[in-house]
Each structure stands twice: as C-alpha cells, then as structure tokens.
Image (cartoon, rainbow, N blue to C red; front, side):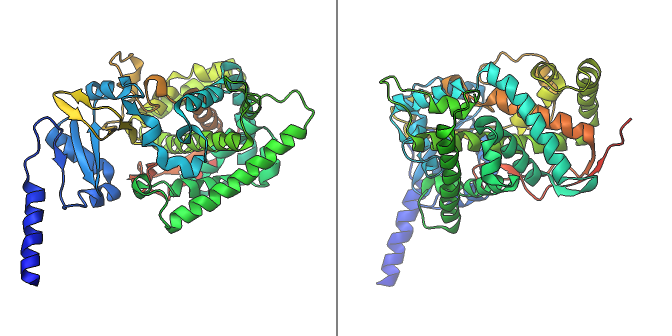
Length: 454
C-alpha cells in the first residue's frame, strides 16, 4: 500500500515538473515541486533573478510557495511596467504586506482615490521652500550629533551610525524640535525603525501576519512609534505657535476633496511610512556612498574639490540648498550607488488585467528588479534619454516624493562628516538580502579621527 502511494506521488511530481507550459506565458522557473524556488529566493533573490535573466531573458516567472511572480527586467520591459494603469497593474494590491508597518487606512490600506490624496498631502509638505529650510536643520542636527557622539577618534559601525543620524535629521525636519524632546535620545527611534525593517523580509511578502518573532517585534515597535507620534500631534494641537511649518503641520491641515480632515491615526501612519521609506534609503545609500568614494579615490578627490570650492571658499563654510545643488560629482556618486544598490530591489504591481509583452501574457504578479554591475558615476555626466533607465526612485506617477529630500540629506551629512573626520575602512561590503530592504551586510566597521584645523 505504501509503495503504491509512493509511486502515485512520484508520478504526480514528475507530471508537475515536466508538464508542457502554454507557449503564450512567460517561462517558469520551478526547481522543487510545490515549493518552487522559494528557498533560493529567501537566501539571495538577486542571484536567483540574475541567473534566470541570463538564461531566459527579460521576462520570466518564479514559482514561489504557490505564488507566481513574473519579472520584467531592463528598460524595454520596465516601460511596460511603469506605463501600466492602476486598473491594469495595481501597486496598492502588491504592497498590502506593508500594512502592519504603515497601519490601517493609510496608503495601501485605503481606496485608490484616497491613497492618491494622501500621497498628494505628503508631496505638499516637501515643496522647494521646505527643502531649503531642511538643509539648515539637517546641518544643525548633524553638527550636534558628531560633537556629542563621536569625539576625536574611535571605531564605529558606519551603517548603524548613519541609521541613527538619518532618522534623527529626517524626523527633526518633518516633525520639528518636539521629536527630540519626545525621544530623549537619538538612538531610540532608529532602533525601533530597525525592528520595523526586520519585520519586512521575503516571508512577509507572502505571509505578513505569521506568529514569527520578527513580526511580533515589528508590531511592538510600530505601537511604540505610533505612541510617540500621537503625543507629538497632541502637543502640536495644544500649541499656539503659528510659526511652525513642516510636513506634520501640512498633514494636520490637509483636507480631502470632500472637506474631511485626516484622522490622527492616518497622520501617524503617513509619518511612519514617510520616515520608513526615507530612512532606509538614505542610511543605506549614504553608507555605500562613503565606501565607494574611499575605495575610488578619483571620485573622492573630485567630491572634496567641490566641497572646498563651493562650500569652504565661495560660501565661507556655509552649507545651503544652492551650494548643495551645485555639487554635481557628489550627486552622480549618490545616483550611481542607488543604481548599483537600490534598497528596494523589487518594485511590484499586482496584475489586475492580463497584459501582453513580447507575445507573452502576464496574468499574475509582476515584479521588477535592478541588474547592474560596475561603479561609474560619470555615466550621469551625460543625460541618458532612455525611458526608465534609472528607476531607483521608481518611475511615472508612482515616483518617490522624497527623492530630492533624500539626496539633500545625504549631501549635507557627507559634507559635514568629510570636513570633520578622516576615515579608514575596508572594501565595499556585500549586500544582505535576508530583508526586503537590502543594505550592506554589517557590521560596517570604520575608524575615524578628527581632522586638524588649518
């Protein structure tokens, strides 16, 4: 009896593996029956997709624990991805796994029209006038951080330090000085956000509410962050200071088209999401930028020449918006790092209506991945007019609203750090793919010593 069952099971597995696929669907990468290639995906999704791309071309499907994800890779395929309408390719349905972090009724857990209104509120808080003010705030907090935390010399985990510094400066810009008083110490919010980040991994995409330790920590961290932000909102509502003007103020005074205002819980969720999206992008990109510059001294020297000519000589040491915008080499380094190491290696949509690409019908979930190699910031010296050739901040109407803020933040922190300290570090660290937010595999140890004033 057992032998008969075994033969039947083996026969079914053989049929499952070797059955002929219809010619009008993308080729499917299977490996283990039923499980598919989920194990390889969980360990190193980038390698799995690179290998599949090399074998199968710019469209293929991965079979992952009962789910099928179709990948569109490269500018030609990406054009289909970004130009699809929400009725065809829904970002809201694809990103529902982040609801435990962002919260109920916010962005991906809201009606499509409400989602776009909420994103518009966020964009209204990141206009040019706010960006110009943000530079001074970031510089002030960065100077204070180094004086209080680093001292004259030592050794630090650069990624951990940049996590703390980017969340500190971003939260101060978005929510005012009250965030410092609410936290007490700069590391607390960074630590809580790290636990939120740890709760987004390849498993969370498929099963975001399993009773896993990392998910329990994620939910506990989210509750603590929400309590902090609620207290800031309540304090702000009691304040009679009319001079406050930041993203939090914008959200608190925004109204939907029907005249209703944002609920406090929605404001909290938007602030959590905005800081989450910006913090990991900035800290990861800043860390990688430092490693790449100090491992490629030609570009480091060009960046430092800009800082000397523009900030030290022309601006007499003042860091402002206009000076940072003129630092072209630093910006090309940042963009090249984002091209090579995007913190979110996948951009996702759920297919709502079947679509065609190269004679193949896409019927399930489509996903997009970055495939890049050599470090060459000079590629940005000449404008690439190929549509969707640079998509580190997304593309089309779903582009990241915080792109300019993030680049200004990185430029400001590096300008101050590079003038204060000499750094000694090793080669560029490999990428850790165990989280959906892919950053350097830590610890990223760096020795620092204060520069002598000339």
